Amino acid sequence: MNKHFFGDTAVLLGRSLRHITRSLDTIITTAITPIAMLLLFVYVFGGAINTGSDSYVNYLLPGILLITIASGIAYTTLRLFLDMKSGIFERFQSMPIARSSVLWAHVLTSLAANVISLVVVVLVALLMGFRSEAGVLAWLAVAGILILFTLALTWIAVIPGLTAKSVDGASAYSYPLIFLPFLSSAFVPTATMPGPVRAFAENQPVTSIVNTIRDLFTRQPVGTDIWIALAWCVGILVVAYIFADISYRRRIS
Image (tube, rainbow, N blue to C red; front, side, top):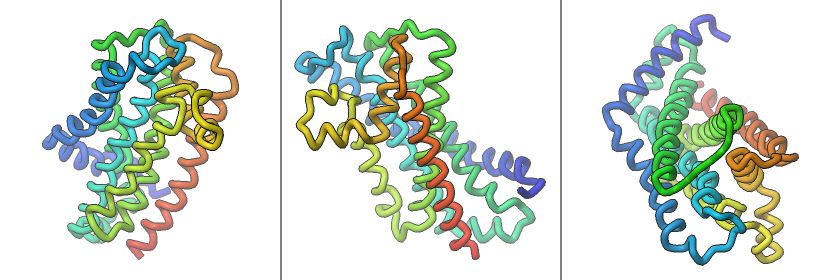
């Protein structure tokens, strides 16, 4: 690793964060979709959905948090795509900086922006009646899982950001990620789903992550779900990083 990697990443991260602070509407827009879903499902559909939980907002929030992340990383792809098209990457290549620091700056900016969006969504949920008796360690565990999930999806986002041919193509990939929680235990128990849908829902990454966060919030034993969730997050992160790195090397070669 280039000995200047951390310093170069910090400088480029500062550049990306300045862009974020100049357009806070990006973070606000990112949070609007999950907040709208939270309001819609709690106040419109919540009374008709039987989850076995006393509070539907408590049941729903873990899935909404994942939707918040999926919604936020679309902007990572867009920012990376625009940088590629503007020629800024070519300028960076002519400078004595660590090449990987350019991507890491975008990834860490995505992480910072998503953390802000997640905090906003949690605050709205608290106003809507969300309550948790989870201790500090449980909250830290939830934060760790959400950060790991954000990094995994962000590295996926890097790939279309580097390879897309148009703005629409760069952002369209995020739509399946936003709707994946609908085919999981995020909104209703998987036991209520028909056979094939239930089989898919119970064996996709969102369900294990949602179940783990929900159990942590309610102080229930997490069982094997937490290891499955971590395995999914780490596996997706490693594979996405490898393909993102390959795509990046091809673009700058």
